[in-house]
Image 1 (cartoon, rainbow, N blue to C red):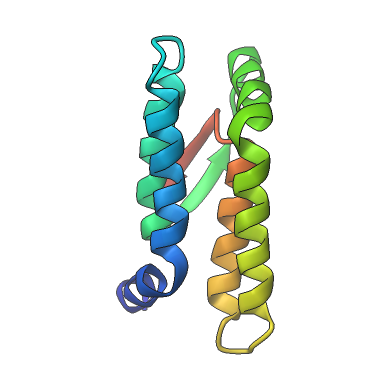
Image 2 (spheres, rainbow, N blue to C red):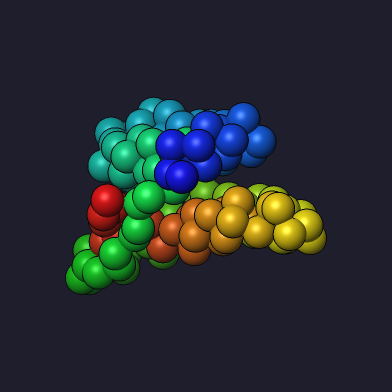
Length: 120
């Protein structure tokens, strides 16, 4: 189910979500200070392209909190709104509910990506 879900996901919206993470990573890597943030974005782009069968575990400390605040002000809010809106659109239909839930998972990750790990 995960492989089929990932294939359908990629064609029906996952590419948009993944490209958002890649674009944010490229923008963050322009500055030397933003390179760690950009590398985190590239790691989560893989999740955004193929989310089925993967879970996110949240944790972290003070460094993650500071990075999350900076991220939230720069890129986090627009990406979370994008993913939440796509999730709402997909949850309107019964067939789209599993895909909408994946968009909600990525929207939460868009708000606080630092200190999070991908499991699966």
